[in-house]
Length: 178
Picture 1 (cartoon, rainbow, N blue to C red):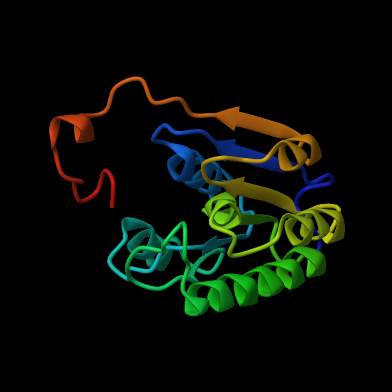
Picture 2: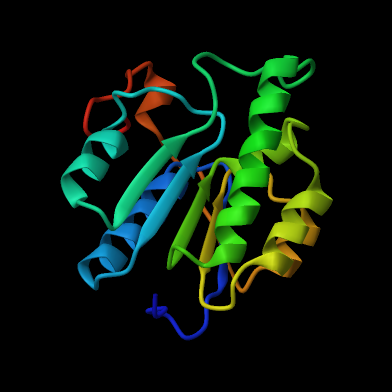
């Protein structure tokens, strides 16, 4: 396989505002239009009815989505061993995917949340960055990006919450938030 990108970078989308996953998916959508291959891993998310899952089926062979979390919420103060095991296995798999260079873009959605919840270790994520294939674009999303991770990235965007209809009690809408 000839890599489509000569130089892959590390991008981070972080912050307390909405749009981190959406920005990463927008990048994937643009890249797919140019024939690049994309693999998305959803850490801490599992729902086969997410819009991304439906889109992946329609995008064809150059776009895949893998959910590596479980249904339900993860406890910040006391995560279940199952959540830790799933996240660590996913990080190991992501490290292999990043190092082989089989995909032009690897999006690790919510991996920064997995760090914040102590499901994975910062040094392991930094090792993944160091071991990625030179042409692979690596995109990490989630709130509370630690400074060491920000320092290791080439591009960091912070989404800031200014106003959201959730605050007025509005539920998530199919096709917009899910």
